[in-house]
Image (cartoon, rainbow, N blue to C red; front, side, top):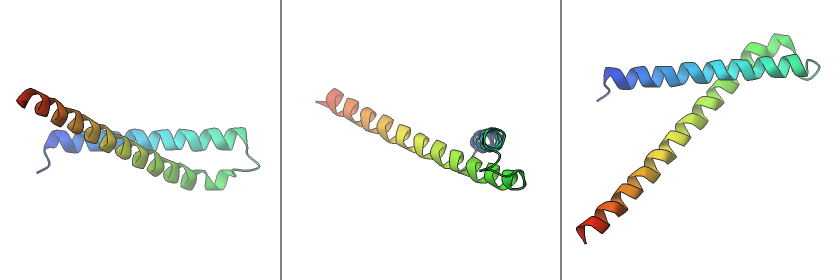
Amino acid sequence: MLTKQTLMREWIILALSLGLGGHLALAMVLHAPERWPWHHAGGYGLLMGVAVYVVAQLGRSLWWLFRQRAKDNQDRLTAS
């Protein structure tokens, strides 16, 4: 069950990811306008934002996995 706190956390992560993607797209358009035309900046920003969001979610999943594995190992050592 999703709590209000969980939903807010996910929305914040999504908003930050989309904002970072927009800033990355803007940086690319400003630093290499011949390779990144202005009329595609919005699409690039959205795609980069989604990519940042996916990387963030993968990082969170790996963090959860490693933390859970460390906790399980600690519980095994304590039970022995």
